[in-house]
Image (cartoon, rainbow, N blue to C red):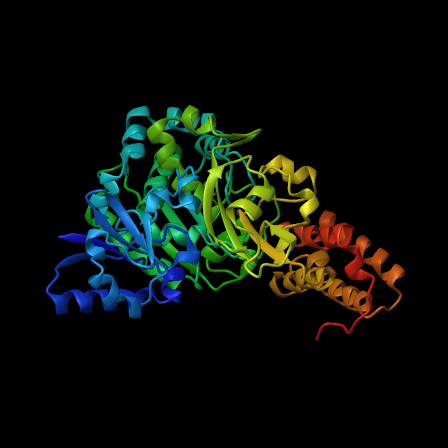
Length: 515
C-alpha cells in the first residue's frame, strides 16, 4: 500500500493541510486506490506547505504547495508512483533548502509518523537512552559536557555543567523541567518538535532524569499551542503504555513520569524562575537569584531546566557520542542550531546547520532575500528583545560570542527580516511597548522604565526636543539593562539601542506619533 504523507503541523494546517488530507482520502476511496495516509510533522519548508509526499521505491517525492483543488489532477498524473505534475518537486531530500542542512535535532521531523513508536525506533529512536543505561549517570553527564551543548533557549549556558550541578546537589527529590514556553517572534522550533517528533523530547527527559536522579518531569507549554499540546499528550500516553514512563517504567531504574503544565501565554514565564512560579500555581513573577534552580528550584528541590530543543538534542548526542557532536560548530558554539527564518523573507522555514554560517548567507542565500523583492534593511535576531542588524553586519557568524561582540544575541534562533519600508523608530517603540505589556511588574526599571520608554520615543517621533529625548532614551536603556531583575527588562535595550546606532536617520525625521 502506497504511503502518502501530509503534515498535521499547525503551520501546514493554517494553509489548508487538513482539507488537503480529506480531499486525498476521498479521491482515493472514489478511485478504489488504497493508500496509507500519514499525518506527519512539517519538514520546515513553510513556503511549500502544504507539502504532500509520496513514498516510492526510489525515495520520497514531494508536491507542493498543494491545495484540495489539485487532488484530482494529482491522481490523474499518477502521483502515487511519483508521476510528473506542475506541483512536483522531485525527491524531497534533494530540495536545495533541505539538502544543504545538517539535521541532527530535526532528523526525524517530517520524516516519521510522530505518534508511532515503531517509526521512532526504526529511525534511531531510543538508541541514546540505551547507551545512557549502559554508561550510567556520571558518564552520561560527562558525555553531555564533552558535546559542548549549550542551552538552545537563549542563555547559552553549558547543559552538561547544569546537569552536573543538579546531580551533585542534595535534596529530597529532583525534577526535570522542559521550558517549551516559546514566545519569541519568528520562532517555532519547539512547536515543530512537539508536533513532529514528540518522542525525542520524552527520550531526552528520560536521559536527563537518569543522569541527575530525578523522579518526575514537567513540560511547560504555552496555551497558544493547542495542536502541540494534543500531540504531546497523546505521545505521553503511548510512552506510558509502552513502559517508557510511569510507575511501572521499564526504561529507568526508578519510576519517572512527565506531566504537562499549560501556561496562560505570559511572555515572562519563558524566564525559568517565573515558569517555576507558574508550575507551582502562583502568578508568574521572577525570583531573585541565588539560589539557582539547580540548587533550589521546583517545589524547593534541585531542578534541571532545559529548553525543549536542548532536551531533544540529547538523544542523538548520546547515541553518537559527545565528541562527534562537538566536532561541528564554530568557536565555543558547538553542534547545530535550528535557525527559524521568518518575516519578510522569500523562503521562510526552519534551517538546521552547524554554528558559523553568516547572517548574510542565512538571509540572502538560504532565505532568498525579501518576499516583497525590495532590499533588506534590517534583520532582528533573538526575538522581540533581539538587536536589529543592518546589511553592514551581515558578515557576522551565527555564534553566541560573535553576536555578543556586536551587541546582539542569538536567543532561540529566530531571524525576522524587514525590507526598506520599515520604520526603525517605531520598531524601537514597539520594543518598549512589548516590555511594558509583558512585564511581571516585580522590578521598577522594567515596569516603569518601559512605559517611560514608550513616551520618550513618541516625543522623538513627534520631533519634540529630539536631542534631549535621545539622550534620555539612552540613559533609560542603561538603567533598564543594569537594574532589571531579569532579561525581559535587561534585554529590551538591545532592539532600542541597535535601532538608534544603525538607523539613526529614522529618529531624525518628525512625524505623527504612534496611536
